Image 1 (tube, helix red, strand yellow):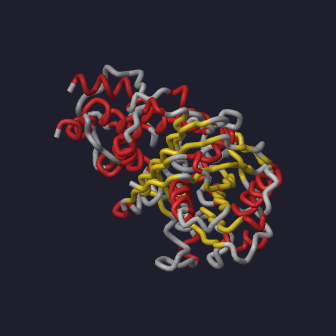
Image 2 (cartoon, chains in turn blue, green):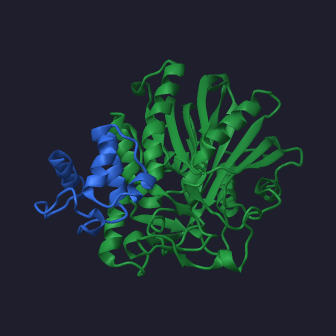
Length: 72
Length: 350
């Protein structure tokens, strides 16, 4: 999970990374925008070889939900 | 996989609207920092927008006249004209037929439109190359034009900063010097709603309702049902899987490797997607020309526009291009296309 959070921090260029955990609501993060979805999809493809689109991400609320998409 | 022998593009020309849109200054609807973030991410800094009374056909007409004049082509020898667009003049008749008359081409000319999006240039080449195998068509004009700026809402940040307008003309002739071309043409209608203009056809006809602007998502983007939308994440997810697969498959069938090409011309979707595919496939970026920064995404026109803009003096002698494009449908295509001494005109402004 920590590895995943680090990847999210890197991909989304989040500055205040210390407060992130699996319950963090990612859409409330400073720096989150509709473009971040593209970064996430690239992350899933590149790091986890997972094919994830808008539809799957739109159902997620927390970083834990995003992590589950990568590991399911 | 479709294969053709002894047919090729002998000349190309392009026309773009004179109006330059600076993307940072395009709209005041979104805060400047949000605009900058989007623009930098997609790598599109300028686009060309057609005036209200300029259509795709006008851009193609200007490109075709330039091509015909620069190469001293006898119009009576044009036996086929194909017009690719999803922004035609009218719902009917076909724009290609109006262009036959306007360009002064003979009535014996075969003319029809191809209604496909971003992948369409390879489709168009394949259709024309196929028809030219009959040997009774002396010269063909493939016209490819789009005014996508008129399609999308400036209040929908998912598409507002992406699309531009342009038209291209390509002269296609038979000559043994061209050798073999390969085209892989694909589609998946189950993803028809990834990119769509829902209203204005016959399934969902124009009405007061379809013209109403409304907030369409959690980000506050606004558009009507007669404006296009794009589910960018789903498109991206689809493309990064299917495009590398299709390119690999095409190379395998043709017995070629990615090093066998002088240039690799991608559909200019946006810089994020194109860079990702190039990185994922470990392609030599020196061989990948780009016009995304100055013309944006001109849909099906982007592949031939990039050739005209960036390879003007580079297609002398024998060259082989790999073309790859993807878009609305979903529809995607890969082409292995030989060029021999292709004459490319200067881009004209309309």
